[in-house]
Length: 199
Image (tube, rainbow, N blue to C red; front, side, top):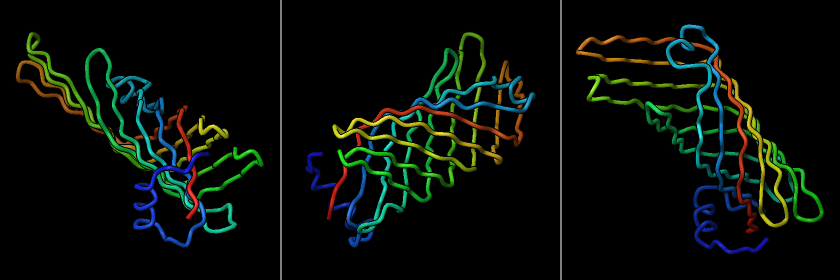
């Protein structure tokens, strides 16, 4: 792949140890579907919660090693017919590289996953306001296959035993609030561009 981003190289030299031989940078889009498991939460928020996001991921490897460090960040932007949601999430953990001779290969990254989402809606005609929040902590894994061209496809699986859900609805100045901790899991598919850098 073409080596080009001097700015990226400079930032990585500051943030990550300059002793590494190779870093893989991925930038792309993920469509992630979260599933609520608790009956009360499903009644309030539905079974499925879409979480499309833009993400950037870095996999860092020392010289001549295929086991390294992974970190990524996701900006979540979601909406349905009633509300708009924004949030952030991240996965941190080890990274395992399985390269092929044609400069393609797999990157598998299990680790600790966490994030939050906030959103809501307002209807002046019906005099209603709704607020929804989620905060979650658990484990997850990303599996990415990158081609020689840089095009990448991936799959993510996450399980959150610590999920906190908040739902508030105000109608005609009457407020109903609901909050609960539950188990939660998600599955996602990603499309990205991946490039690698030696230094």
